[in-house]
Length: 478
Picture (tube, rainbow, N blue to C red):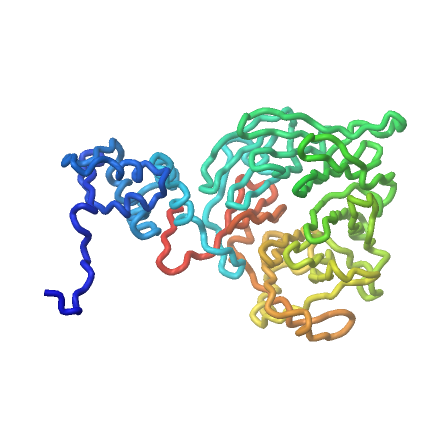
């Protein structure tokens, strides 16, 4: 008799259960678990068979790995037993059962934070192991240029293919489509497009001018892209240089953004390019060093009007107190619409608002972290090899072999001005690495992709992969 206090059954009725025989080992689960992988998964399809058949469904696969797969479908997480298998073994089984997206979600690292990051692995190509350039994907995948080859590693950091190009070395690479790379070399002429899915060369772009004999054998120094265009900086043997705007759909040249003679530091070829989605503009920089220190420029172009809209030349602009402390590297934070530079002499980090650029837009950030002040003597502060990369509203700076992160902690209106354009209270500086990490070699390139940071060191084989610590309850299977 129902007295109104009955409770729902804790165990589903037998009609909702299904028995499986996986490689000789028997499992029992529910139809809802079988269908948790989505309508296109193998298990969902098997769950639709007639319930009149008393025999267990037979699947000729490894039962131990299937136990992990079943736990994933039940809880959307990986059990501790997943550590017994490699990431590739788990990925192969997930692909067979049609639940790769669920495994990818469970195995993906937590949101990336430089303050809580560490090296989890090193991706090392089988041959020519010293990487020269990398391009990353939003899913944490990475393409590595090594020698004249391009190797692709998927979201799981598993090797998915290698293309051998005709180039002796590759110094620039850009991911213009999910399967198409634009590559260039500072030792060979031309920009080349390669398709990983078809393992083939799609074509090439060369900068030529029949009316100017100086324009020949133009090599690529930097590549960037927007949703519809590719931007490539070219440099000729006689130092003439330009930025070509290339249509993505046709892989044809649309226009020249800038042509310079390259006769001085303020006219050298662009060495770094970045697309600014908020304004649909392109920022480029060039830096060179000599007996008297560093010099270079930062410029912003409007491709639609085919004109330069802003520039900063160093030395030669800015406050007199900063003269001689030219930038060593520059990068743009496209999420915050800010531009950062790291000074070659002092090592100071400066920021400018891309929406309020003027003759001298720089604000120099004061280190406000007391724990950093006492340890900075153990590591280089200003050095010519400093590199900078903005990612996920964080600024990563490599100084020699050390890696640090500047994290935003306040709004611009909360700045505390000190003097001469210096402020504190907006960004906080922390080391990402440990001292032993910094001794691995000089940092050459930093790139972010998905919830990972990738680091290349000079003359060191492989690409370091940095991830944040897993949250409570998560399991790493690296």
